[in-house]
Length: 223
Image: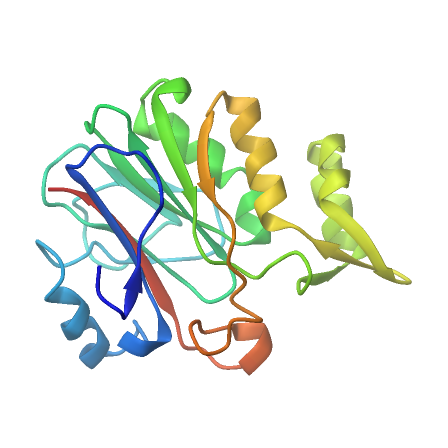
């Protein structure tokens, strides 16, 4: 791993490779940054047009296809999502046979992008590793009552991931909701969820902090 990237701390098979870029490597929407990233990868990433939904595609696919997650069972195909406060979730089969990446902002997380990704990967949940990549942390992510209501309507247990901040507003723990959803699916090997893109300003882009559109990338592949 280079100083410009970080990787999951998990016990996935050695054939599974994964990384998340930092702001040091640049905005992943720009050609120069993508060129620097490409030197670290076996192939060009399968970039998605992300829409905060739950669609999941199997790589390879046409660049710019609309979805918020992808997976592959083929060696050398690079699944990728772009983030800048939203949570990237990387998946790897314990036997190295499949990998996937999901873009889980609050809308996608609430709607079920994690569940859809696990279903499409097609590996028994108990045989999956999941890593929660850098996202806005629970002390920094304030949302309105409508966001809390949407989560609780889907799963009343999600209420535990919200802390009251001021009238009509709540601090949302994206990592906490993701862990709840993964546990409900039977995914036991869960790691990550320790970074905050909003507060770690020297390392990560943050849309909420900077009000800018720069993006990082989370990528995974089978070598």
